Image (cartoon, rainbow, N blue to C red; front, top):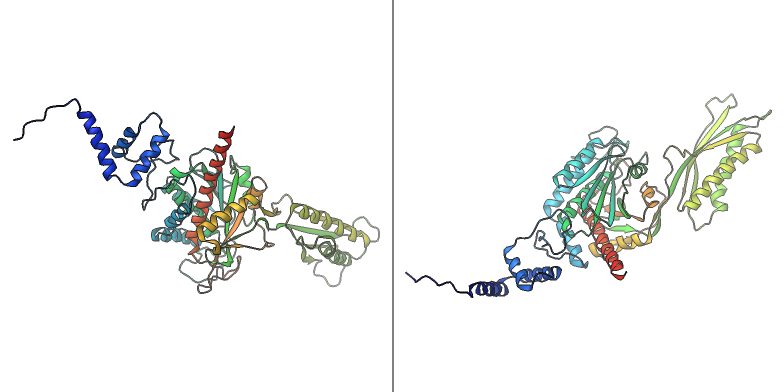
Length: 491
């Protein structure tokens, strides 16, 4: 038996030096980096205390952004960059999470469940319930309901800055013609515009952001919005507080014109403002009224000159008459003639000018034929959409993030189109950017335009879309935080 050791007064110092020696010789570089970072954050701890703490204290888990000096847990795969200074490695890590086979399988299942059960505007009860179930499983808090079925979910610190990402949830009154395992089970209803994919990608982004929540330098608001196709759900969401504290917002739409997973957008006007009108020609108070059909026909012809003769040819606009009704009695003069159509423009100024001139032309032409006219633009029925104009800085941000994430060859500057989107209502309140993700895959038959009964998507785009959403939001908060802190330090 060995003789017992005598307690030495130098034993505590010996233990300390041995511990330091073990750390220096056996600890991995990451531990040293963490210990060094932690010692900078806590001036009252010396290097030795910090080093010993790195050996004895496990990483702390937090649902929110870690406080100063708190150890940051590793993500799956051992990624240990807190992305305080954004690098390509941060983008690659987000894409790596989205690229895992279990993530891909899960996000496709979310989309398919929604696709099987399409719901029209303000009726998205099951879709909303599915989203809330997924958020509950991710331990993400949310506010519900907004605009009947909408959801406002929160990931991050709960503190400024706030950035939002939006997905629309409603389907269309179309009978699906695509024969596949997950075809719509609701007769006469179909996700023919890709909103099922939009919801799945935003839920996917929520999952990625939750996994990286301790790295978020602010708060991400996830908006699941009803009634984009009809009812202007965006306006209702805004009225009920969806944009509270939010300083910027982004949204994505699938596109059959871009190859799978290619991102597309542009600065400035992207989608047109859209409105509708209905004119009624009648005999009015004239003692001898003219021919109502002739008066209406003259008005229709004169409307064509608004765009062709009055507008800037470089400022695309549309005035199109799409219906006329004078009754069906071939042996009698009609008591009134009704006609109407649509108008489109890429700026609010041009749009307002079209509204003004359409009414002036119709009323004046009716008087020429001793008739009277009224024009209704349905301003109180949520049928007018303002133009979608991308904020230049927000566009540059999404372009930078997308290029870093998917590569410069997978980002395209696209042309404006005359379609309309109620996301434009958000853009009138705060800086916004709208962009596309490609789903075109000829081998799968994913080539049909939105609102077609044959519309389908290449689901390989879902994971990339989720990663793009997540990267846009996280990097926005990162760079805004740096900007805000720099401003405060300079004051």
